[in-house]
Image 1 (tube, rainbow, N blue to C red):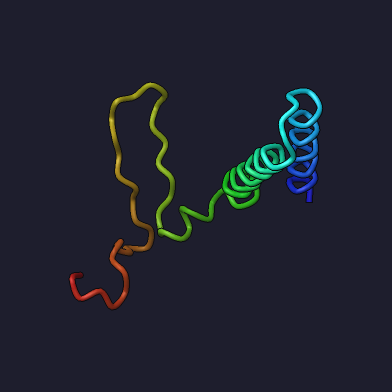
Image 2 (spheres, rainbow, N blue to C red):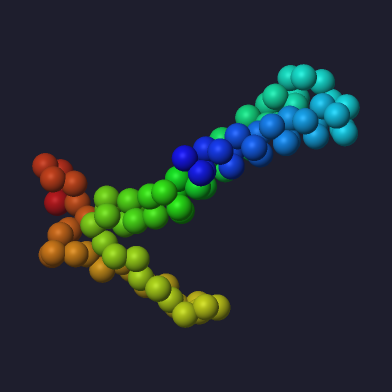
Length: 91
């Protein structure tokens, strides 16, 4: 609920700033405010509401690398799962 309230407040603030301070028309203000709240909702759901959904869906634990490392690591499958889709004829 907090994410949606924050997104709503950002939408209203961007809309008011575009109309009042920047003197844009209604449509550009509406589109910019909608784009802002859409991006905030997406990022909030991805990183705050469901932070582990991606790793759980693909069946691996996130692998941490040291900061500023040039080394790339592949994720390690859990429970001896492969990354192939069940029923895939190429697996």
